[in-house]
Image 1 (spheres, rainbow, N blue to C red):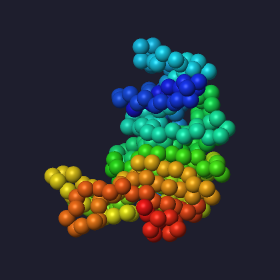
Image 2: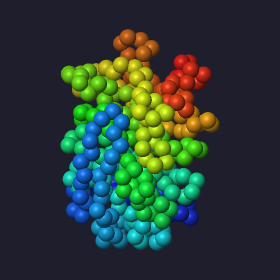
Image 3: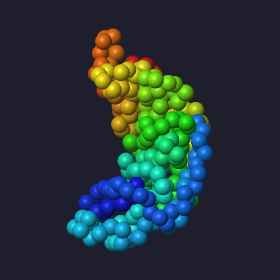
Length: 269
């Protein structure tokens, strides 16, 4: 999966386009070890050349000061699926992209840092990438859908992961909302949650109709004063035992990565 950034700085807009297919052959994959909060990354040997993107596919207003002719490709893996799903800017003009990379069929959350000129910041993580496998041994559920930069410079990503990777049957499909905080170097922040990871289990998942399973999902994240975090998501409705629909969930976390009991009711709205 190749990721290509399009930027139009005058409009203040950055759009990420993902093109399906094999990854760039110039990338040499590096195995990433699993674990509750492992931080490592594949090491791309080189960015994809600009010729990989045809002129017809480019927007009309490309910023030539960004990447190569306005395009920056950042493959995370040469052989497996990977994708960026969210972007956030830092006050210094740098920016971060978050998503996932597959590791032998086990998805892990991924973050990349870019300089304002559209080059990987290789001081971040490993060669510009930080990868956290929250549910090591899981399958293709885990990913990051949202990212935000806190006033302290720490990076917060939110998404989902398997509730229990050892579960079988329907229970194996249950998901939790996940929030990971990285420090400015791209390492999990040990002062947040457990080893940099906060897990929000709003409700037990449930088979609804046919093969549909409803679990917890995180869709967005925002920073609050004092390095607190707000996570927007959805969860199985608990209004009645027979409910199979979802309710919106807004959860508040303290700077330490635990539910903020001063937020809503017991940390939820």
